[in-house]
Length: 405
Image (tube, rainbow, N blue to C red; front, side):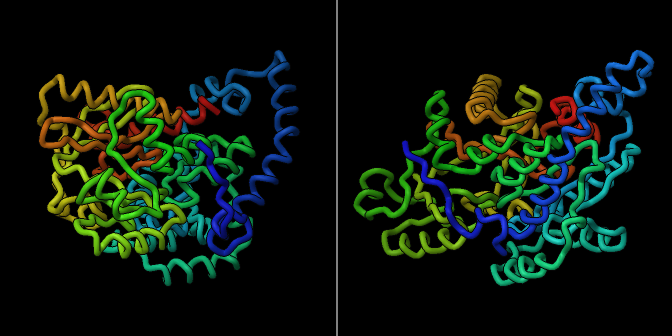
């Protein structure tokens, strides 16, 4: 399999399509250039027999020691950005930030599209909620244009013990931002840059799922011939961007005449479009936390798919934890989820989604490397059933990121 590099406005660090990466990059280079000096000081301190145990809080070379000693963390929450999932990211941050502050941690909010937020702007933005539709292309273009003006210092995160990534979609979830943080040696939540990129690419993910025996529906990559779709997949099919989330740009196509238009809709959000066999049936989700599968949940959406409105509007879908499934089927789903998580080499947490067809077969839909993180999002609901509160989940994720360094 040959993977062609993405050469587009999205991948150029100075492009307006993702201008916030330019500013983040400048901070990464600065932090990285100072890393050797930091390490010299730390090594000298560690070698000093007079150093106290309290100094362990500052020993960045010893992640386990830091995680154990730091009780009050300084956390930078990165959210917002310029992807079509901007509103979803803001909704996550709106609950993450107060939950961590209630535990006594020092938290500052950084919108990667506009910079670090003063208290008044933070309150205004974090109470805006999720609109029924994703932000329009025009609105996103406007935001990318405004982002050119803010200074690199506006996204300075060097003082934080850990960066909590509350970003969804785009550069915040597809590995680009993670690569910059990796270069600087900054501790952050979620998966590394390679795993993030692979999980975001549905074509590559599905190939890897099959390599470890996780069933996933047949698919083709556009451009496609109608005859190939009819012979290989049959109708209906799901047409979607290969590297998007929250069902943005997704269509269920039932007849030949609608296929071309659906592909054009999806193409507006990505340079690659997937045409996938539609699996009718019940939908399930499995969260992964620190190498263990959480209780299975079921999603009952009002329509054929768990779409943007169903996910983010009040009363949009019914979510049941734990799912009403026989123990053997729940165990099978958890096993599939762990296999999917491991083959993608995802980090401390993820969420894997499935469909169950009318014959009782399970099919993996996708993996989410940065799943939604409000108290009522799917992963936190699963954690709650396992006896882990929302605040405890967040703290555990942050301390784990510091420990892993």
